Length: 322
Ligand SMILES: C[S@@+](CC[C@H](N)C(=O)[O-])C[C@H]1O[C@@H](n2cnc3c(N)ncnc32)[C@H](O)[C@@H]1O
Image (cartoon, rainbow, N blue to C red; front, side, top):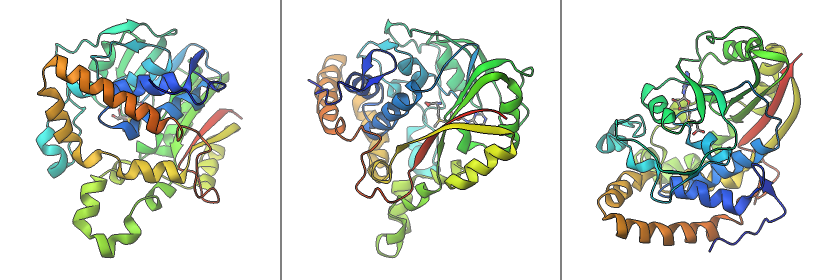
């Protein structure tokens, strides 16, 4: 069983951190390092005010918000059953999740406690998957490098955990300010450029290019607007936004653990898992999730850091119009 070492910490309503970790692990079991990151994101997000109308920008397949909002999947569901181009992941850095088929129908055992009015994303396949979760009222295909397709003051809450993927970050922040109501909030979870240092990069001379390419798989190239804390805060100011709170919640230690993770072997693990009979897969997944619950529960703590003097890796900003 998953030990709940954090029974005093409530996440996403009445759900404990241990239970939240278990739910993220069930969905992302073959990438446990993503599960603990998302658990920490969810816990930070639970501290922010959330009112409708709401929008999840860069919401992808919607699984994060579905779980954050208390939704539950049958244990047989995981995000790796609907992937494609597994053979191109290593050679071409293909996005295996940018794939959808008509049969995609995750089995839901509990609906999310709250719906989100709008989800946008750049990738049609991800939005198609998000539709199957019945958490969003509207799904809109949109590139956030362009003006957002909403009227002024449309939303009380705009959430985005993908801002560092957007090249035209200053334009995007001005657009967020425009579409949020004067009493509303923008919640951004942003990565810092410390992420570039929280890798094995400084050992390149010893490890070699090939090693770092296998570990990295082109991640950093997807994040054109990574910046340090003061640059993010200057960007918010220049966009006419006021910082109501800033909560660092991913540490240097978390980032180093995530840097290695199971990323290089994920395509093989996924092929192997999907080739198993449903019964064998369920039994192995059950033991796997139990084990990672125990291993990751203690580090699923926003303060867990062996090197606390260094910059965090991700911060949640609660922003409002100035
Ligand atoms: C790390 S994923 C996060 C997805 C989701 N929010 C989650 O937590 O699982 C980043 C998302 O941003 C989307 N994205 C990247 N660039 C974008 C852009 N320019 N406009 C809109 N969405 C974008 C990607 O398609 C992807 O779904």
